Every structure is written in structure tokens, then in C-alpha cells.
Length: 576
Ligand code: DON
Image 1 (spheres, rainbow, N blue to C red):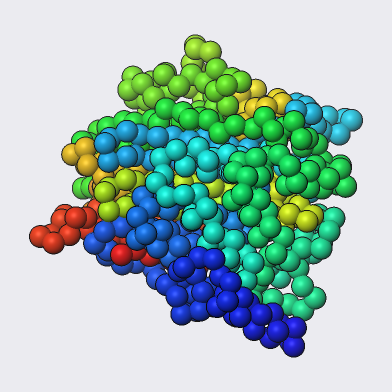
Image 2: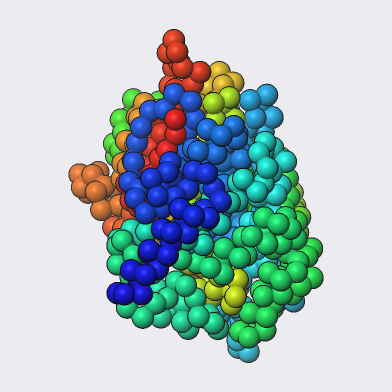
């Protein structure tokens, strides 16, 4: 107790005396010791929604200082790596979908990739059975991290000096911040896993139980962030940080090498863009499955009068479940890293193909997944999302992850950050489900340098070719269905962002052939779906959506934005 008190006093003195960031500190705009969760608000200029109040506030301040949405996206992700170690990260990867005011769309792929020494059967025992624990926990579970390369790729569209964007994260790591009850519980629940999977002491573990209001200081992480501040991308992928990663690998039988780190590059891809009833929907292409799944599902309902069915009516839900089933069957068979596997993209998003997928749809009963295999094509527990818009209408949607909560649970000794367990997103063996129950095959098999298939679905919507919605969520394979339902809630049922994200979600992913529903899902609809042959399973809330919606301008405002953060976590909005 005395130690904690001393740490708090030290942190306060440091902030007052040597805090580098003008707006971080006691009684400043972003006060890491006193902050509140704000779920929804209307702003007149710019806004951010993210998984943590401090990260959203940092993003808003960066935009107040003249930064644009891309500056804010960098600062928010770096802050999340400090204040939301569950999923915010520098040891993981992600995807960014952005749109500049001049209409340019941007898709950045900073997904992790398989290390050079990875092999197709690296998670199989000598009898060919999958040892899934190896792809989930510990050193062998990690792909080569992509986040820092992704942030520097994003920086090409930013305005402020990089040092200004990273300093808030450094200050909060160095001098600490107060944790919430949810975070205390989460750190306590993972204590044994951190100890088991890390080879050196980590700041995330302490003798006594964490409790709400404790201060978390991460000195090693602060030093790592300083190396990135001072040396750019090389501060992570080369030099001391890279050496610390490789030393950690050696202590734990991992395989990421100095060469793997040095050769990692973020990739700029072409965003997917399609029309839905006059709106433009912009999403991420492979190696994320998100953009294609959203495309297929939205197109499968486009010719139906969904609004007239009513929100969460049996008719609307049943239709949407059947679109989910069909899109996920395609995901399992046809999607993987396009640089290693010829993804039949053109066919998968063609109107004729999508229409044909719904040809056997029956509005009176459940289809059966084993009869709905993927279309025949002749061509060959955490992530986090942030939604941002700036005063000029630049929009950024980022989903980033370590994969499971705290990733591999391995903290890099001396560097203070967690590594991902993203190798589990590969298909470790055809037909063997990963931690989200997803199956896959050749398209998503392991190969050195290949990027594992993702469900992350950062999404933008335009109305009359103008910014309208920024949206996304964590949730593994449930991500595309949660984004889908949020878009339908807003575009068809005219819901506010808060109502659209907080309403109960349902999820079908082809296999297993069940419909997951959240606890507050309408019991009458559930009963009717059961009678139609659906196997309904109740589950805890799985998504944490962050949504920004543009409102009609009033006389004085350049923009008016309604922003909402999910009720299911500590997610919070900020803006000005
Ligand atoms: O890329 C993917 O699809 C997964 N690694 C995402 C993991 C995730 O969303 C976990 N969050 N709840």
C-alpha cells in the first residue's frame, strides 16, 4: 500500500515537473488520474470513439492542436498500447481504412505475418493432430508485429511531427495512469497466464490484486516508445527493441528473427467500395475478410424492403442470418492473403454471383450449413477499434489487435509490451476450428511471410459522396456481422449511433450451424426462430462498436457529428 502511495506521489511530481506533453498531466486537458467515460455526444468539429477514455481524449487534443484524423489515429493507437494492453498494441497488427477530404480512399494493411521459420504443419503433433494451445499461448503463437510499420505508413497522411503524436503515450507509460475496475479485473484474471508465458517480470503483474484506482506505470514500455520516437520505425524493427524481441523468442522457443523484423513492411491496398441503396460503403480487402463479407451480405439484402420488416423482427433477423451463413461459407473456403493465394475477389463481389448464393433462400425455415457449402468459383477475446473524423471531414477507421485478450500473454522482457497470438488466425489444419470456431483450408494455410486471414472490418459510409458513417468493432469472427447489423440499423431502421451499437446482436458464421444471440435479444423472436429450425445459443456480448455519424450541418458548424462508444466496455468518446 505504502509503495503504491509512493508511486502515485512520484507520478504526480513527475507529471508536474517533467511531463513532456503540454496537455497530459494533473488538471490538464488529459488527466490520467481523473477521467470519465462518455458514451455518446454531439460535437461540432471533430471526434474520436475508442476503447478507452484517455485514448479518445488524446486523439481529440491532437486534432485541437492542428492534427488531422490520421495524426489522431496514430496518437490514439499508441495511447491504447499503454492504457488498454488487452488489445491496444505495438506487438500486434491491424487495418486502417481512411478517406481524405479530397475523396482519396486509403487502405493500410499492417497485419502480422508468419515468421520465416514458420511451416505449414508447425502446430501439428507427430500423428497430425492440431496442438492448438501452441498457436494461442506463448512464444510460438506470435506473428511478426505490424503495428509500428502501419503507424509510419499512416504518417504519410498526417501533419504534425511524429514526436508530438507519440509523446502522450510515453508520458502515460512513464508516469502512470489510473486503471478502471474492468481493467483491474481483467489484469487479475490474466495474472497466471502472464507469469506462465513471460520469461521476465512484467509491470502488468503485481503481488496484491489490482483494484480500480490503482496506478499502472510501465517504464520498459516508455523506453521502447522513446526508441520509436527517436529512431522512427527502426526504433522497433531494428536495434535494441528488435534484439529484445529476439532474446525473448530464444528464451521461450519462439521463432521470430531479426531478419523477420527488419523485412516487415506495411502494405497499401486498394479499398473495397460498393453501392448500397445509394450509399457508398468502403471497406478493407484481403487479407481481411471483413470488406468482402460486408459487401456480400449487404448486396444479398439490397433488393429486399428490409425497413418495412422492422428492427429485429423475425423476418429481418431470419433473412440476415441466412446472408451471414452464406458469406461465411465463402470466407472459409476462398479467403486468405492475396499475396500468397489467388483470392477470387472479382467473382465473390459480382452481383450475379451474390444473387445466385441466395437462390435457395427460404423465408420460412432455416437452411442447413452442410448443404450450403462455399460457392463454386472457377477462378483460381480482444481486438480494438477506433473511429475518427476531423474538422475537414477526413475519416479514419482502424481495427487493431493482439488477437486474443493480451495476445500470447508474453511480454517482451525489458521492452514492456505484449506480443500477439495471431498465428491462430491461420488455418492450422483444414477443418480444425481456431479460437473463434472458424474453419479454413488451403487459402489460409501457414507459409513463411504470409498474412493470416482476418475478420477485422474497419468501415466508412458516404452519403451523396460526402462523409456519413465511421464504424468498426472487435469480436473475432463476429466482427463483420456486428458491423453489418449496425449499418442496417442505421441505414434501414434510421437508428442513432448509440441505439444501433447497443441493440442486441446475433451471429451466424456457417459453421458451427448455430445462431448466437446476446442475452437481451428479443425472446419472442428467439422462439419463432427456434420454431423455424434455428439452433439458438445465448452468449455474452461480443462486440464493442465505435460509431461516428455525420448530422446535417447547422448555421455555425463546419460539421456536426454524433459519436457513440459501446456500452459493453470502458469505451468512450471525445471531441470538440
Ligand atoms: O483478425 C481477426 O479476425 C482476429 N484476430 C480478431 C480478434 C478479435 O477481434 C478479438 N476480439 N474480441
